[in-house]
Image (cartoon, rainbow, N blue to C red):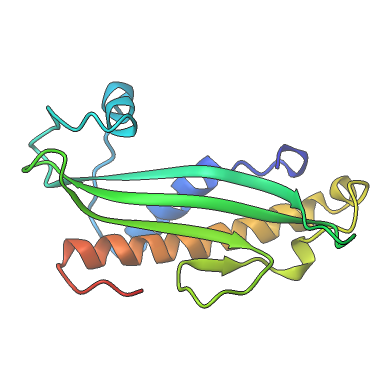
Length: 162
């Protein structure tokens, strides 16, 4: 996605923070590379007890792939979020997966990317960079909204929606 000057991680982080602020949800950002490394390696002991839980959001993949059958290239992403209990270290309170591509699926955490983001050939990426950047930005705003919905639902101990 570098060709379009779209960076998934900062875009998702900004959108999550904006959505939390819009809803006036207080979630403290823990800027600790050691903590993040431990959480990513599932070393879930010695977690900070000054917070109730840790929300771990990971972008597993974000890019374009060839659809096949000469249909061009489409964006695809896989994102996960886990809410990890700090009182009972290592217990996963809940976890969610978010995915997006050109296909429509009957899953509230699957996002169908707009057709305009699908590129017929490698040659069109540079020419359509602004359209791609704007479209992906919009998709990541929608993903952040759903992700915050899930986090707030867990925080408020409401039932999971699938």
